[in-house]
Image 1 (cartoon, rainbow, N blue to C red):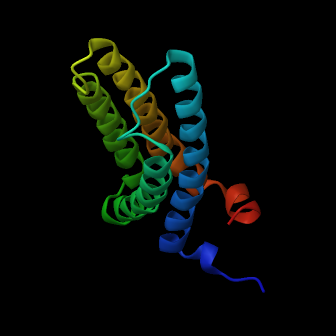
Image 2 (cartoon, rainbow, N blue to C red):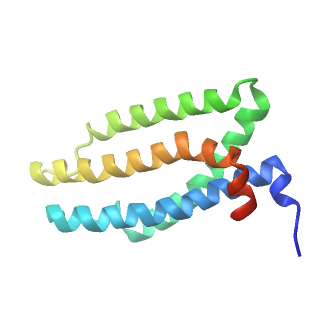
Length: 144
């Protein structure tokens, strides 16, 4: 049964966001594992498997909705979305560098590195990959 849901812009934006969320979840989990193994960072109360799975997979369909709103509300919505989310990525990266996670300085530095990597992965996907895949006819045909 072939459905035309992929031709509806709202559905296409949400499904593209969901697809990117699943891919980013795997990338963030691998990054988390490799980073913790490389640095020996022991604290896992905030960034762990559960929070990455739930947060990323809930975040990206919402980002898809925001993308849909941008392309409907603004004439150059695609470009404006990229600019806004690139600026948000820069802002959250800057804020991640100022976080004080632990009284142990080395743990704070390691946490900043872990958080910064995840912010950059998610920010790049939101600002670059979502608009690219949304506009890709091949992606819509093959994946959606």
